[in-house]
Amino acid sequence: MITSDNVRITFDDERDGLPIVLLHGYGCRRGHWEYQREALLETGYRVVAVDLRGHGDSDTPKHGQTLARLGQDVRELLEQLDLDDVTIVGHSMGVSVALAMFTVSGFDRITRFVAVDQSPKIINDEDWSWGVKNVTWNNVDDCVHWRFKWSNEELEPALPAGSAMAEESWETFDHQAVIKLFVDHFVADWRDTLPRLPMPTWVVTSRFTNYYHLEGMEWFANEVPDGRLSVFEHSGHNPHVSEASEFNRCLLEFLGHD
Image (tube, rainbow, N blue to C red):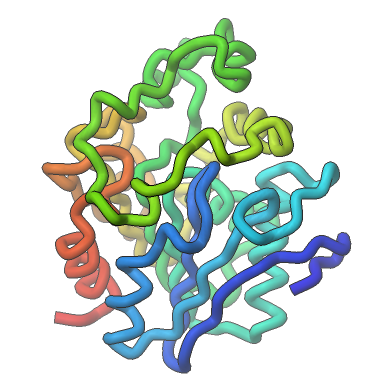
């Protein structure tokens, strides 16, 4: 797909059926949904997995490095493919991309939303303490430039051997090419969007995520009129990879399958 600002967005669109649109996190790509892709296709869903702008096989332009623009990319994809009755499944920054889309262009075409381990506000301050642990306005510049160790994946359970996410090195991702997007991700605040979400929303977190507090994820689910929360007991930031079978079972249940 070529966006309205002339950027090539790469995506996979497989089979017919009700569409599930998969939005990966920062530094990831569409292939990291490998376990969900298989389960959803086997159950008869249409699976649309996107490489967000600046990631995977999509273009990395200097312009448009904001969550609002990435959300617009997703909106244009929905319209180009003429998708209706869509379930958006976002992980980490992919949740924020979806919330940006909802904030800017509304909820048309969307009937369900899955938000995997992402706070609506990353920076902690005097009225919010459920962002990424230890990130504040005083150190955010050091955080986004990796001068301050705020991410502690070594404290989480190891990812399954052989998974695409486990096999790839973070060092291969060109962080500097999308630094403006990373900054925008850190300073965004989507809390006022949550009470406006009209669709059933499944909020997911894990017992061992090194990023977020359980209380904040509970708050997220409670702010959404039709929100619900699941806590995966043996995962870190990536329960859809670490506990793929149980995650998929719960996802299909949320979609209406017993």
